Image (tube, rainbow, N blue to C red):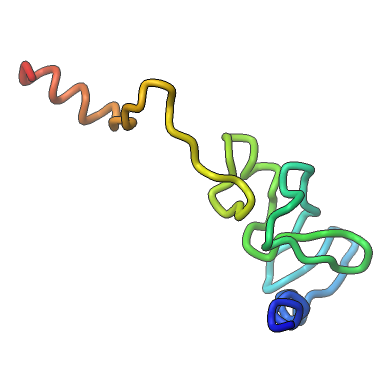
Amino acid sequence: MADDKKKIGALDGAQMTPEGLSFKGFILSPVVENCTGCERVVPFEGANYCPTYADPAKKWSHGICNFATHVKATVDKEGKTKINPLKASKRAARGR
């Protein structure tokens, strides 16, 4: 019950404009298919929007959205952690 009230209040003050949904000075784009199942998605006037990020398509274009609540992080097949390329090049220069 509390989650329903929180979702309803998530887009309080939002207005539909010709450009899209205006919320706190930003124009929100409708969510993309990858966002299906996320807890942050809020319906507004027949469409679903993400109040956390204005353009969900851009967020998913670089991989997994870091705001997604329905996707779990995966470990690479070798089990190694990813190393910052800048640090790796410095280590290689020092001979480590």
